[in-house]
Image 1: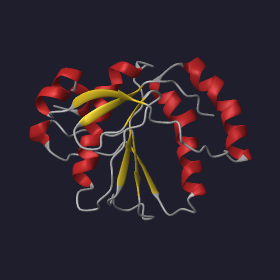
Image 2: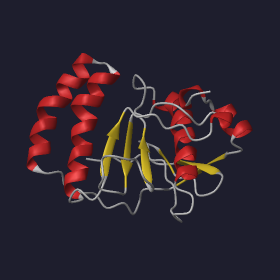
Image 3: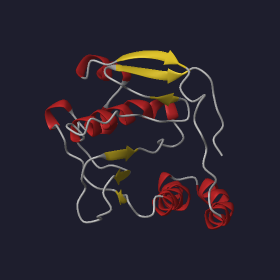
Length: 175
């Protein structure tokens, strides 16, 4: 099974996750994007949305944002795109990831701690949640021993501290 094969039902049955609602973003502090990113997105967002494919949104919108994140971090993180992330094939935690960020500056090898980033498939946020959660569970396994909490962040969903998926009760606008 691949990450994209998970459903809410298989998250509960195979990965033993519960689901709950909470206020998750009320204390989040926002960062101001640099002028170059603002200009790039001013041009790229309308184009990416009009092309209306996952690949176009990935290349024109998401990639520049992640490159900006790497720049803001003074290149202390590494960025990977489209790499295999096969953690536990028996549990279905395997497949190609849209994007990965590593806490290491080296681009040669993916090392813990990592963040996995999954794009909403054809703007189907709710339908993509199980894939995101499965990827997050794989990230948690990969990061074991680093004593790091693993978070899933979507437009309206976040966090799995142990075994409960918490859905954002309120909608916040980012950016």
